[in-house]
Image (cartoon, rainbow, N blue to C red; front, side):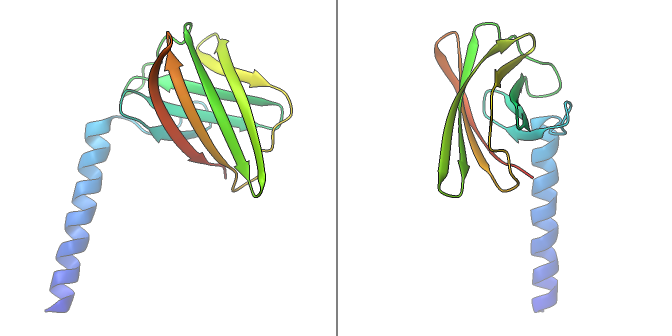
Length: 126
């Protein structure tokens, strides 16, 4: 009896997860980064030691116009905290410099568009 209940619970959980994935669009990285879905948009972070890039997509695969957008990233690596402002750079938001992007670093992105809050995304670097 317990096995049947466990099997039904697992099936329901997997079914719900796949339904959410289909309803929310494509959450696969398009630029080689890490994807985080949000309410108003999906976010893809590409983090390298000398450049941070944040791509903002409509739910699906179309990149949003970020010409009037900006983002503030907070990088948390152990006890170290680094805050970075990203500005428009073509089809993405970007900052250059020296960044701690070691595996396990947590990144919180707060994105605004035309001065209005667009959303927040959380990432853990691999």
